Image 1 (cartoon, rainbow, N blue to C red):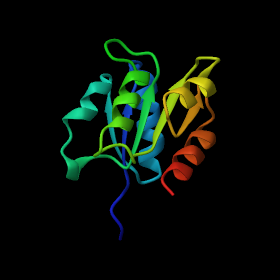
Image 2: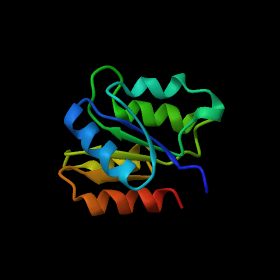
Image 3: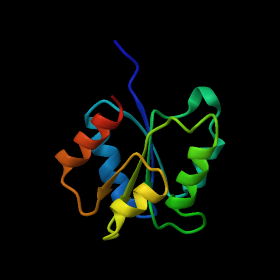
Image 4: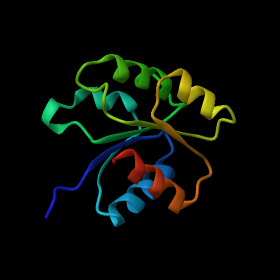
Amino acid sequence: MTTPKKIFVADDDHDILSIIQIMLQTENYSVITSNNANDIFAYEKADLPDLIMLDIWMSGLDGREICHQLKRHELTKNIPVLFISANSNIQEIAKAYSADGFIAKPFEMSYLLNKVHDSLQ
């Protein structure tokens, strides 16, 4: 049996985090959730996730800045990052900050799961 893929999800909406966590765990992913995207920088190399999902607008450093830092850092630059947002310009924002994709809120569960699966290929 293979080790489940690890996914880090940061959003300041607790309900969104809970929904995403349940959906992903149902698909046998290991899920770490946080309402503070800065938590991603506390992980050691061996504990880094296989995928990072970030809300664009959060207090403190928002998802755009976190993604920018992740893509500039040697340890994390190759980890796929998906933005999650209700922003109408999410596609342009994802491109501008070198995210690997995006999920627009509100989202269908099947769409989110497909995006996650595709990002982990």
